[in-house]
Each structure stands twice: as structure tokens, then as C-alpha cells.
Length: 127
Image (cartoon, rainbow, N blue to C red; front, side, top):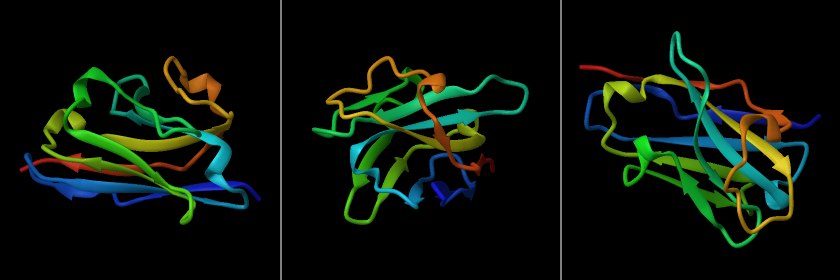
């Protein structure tokens, strides 16, 4: 059974950091483009970041540029999202998603491009 499992969410104060993990089971992430998305209450799901399957090319949404870093460890079959300088606007459920695509870029990948999704992990930024 192909599965993605996110972890690492929680409650953090403004200015704090969290590292989210997206672990795959039942398949290897090596040839998959991985994206992170988030959905805040009452808002549409939005793309946060993505990483290509080859070359490690990354992309970030404007609100998180310079604060978030996506990375992958194929040996651990896991993708990470390091989130620094968090603010209340970052509060959301964070989802990782995967699509099998041998690609050096993930630019322009929309949510409908991905066919595997995790269950999400809650991130709450509040004092």
C-alpha cells in the first residue's frame, strides 16, 4: 500500500521553527516530485514548496521564501520542510504530495498534478 505520512507539526510561538517530515511507505520516493501544501481554516489549499525528483531543484511560494527550506533524503525515503521565522499566517494543516515524474523541475506543478497525498499535520503559530 502506497502511503505518505507527515509528522512534526505542533504549536509554536511566533518566530519559532518546526521541521515537518513526509515519509513514504510502500514505494520509493526517488523518482517522485514532492510538494508541500497547506490549508488554513476557511481558505483554499495553497502550494508551499516542491522539490524535483532529479537534481534537487526547489520552488517556494512567495509568502515562505527565505523562511522555509525543502529537502529530501532518498536513503531515508523522506522529504523535509524546515520552517523558520514562523508567524500566525503560517497556521494551517500541512500536506505532502507525490507524483512519479523523472524531472529536474517542479515549477508549475499544481495540486491536481499530484496523485498521492498524506493525511496532513497541523501547524499552529500562536503566542
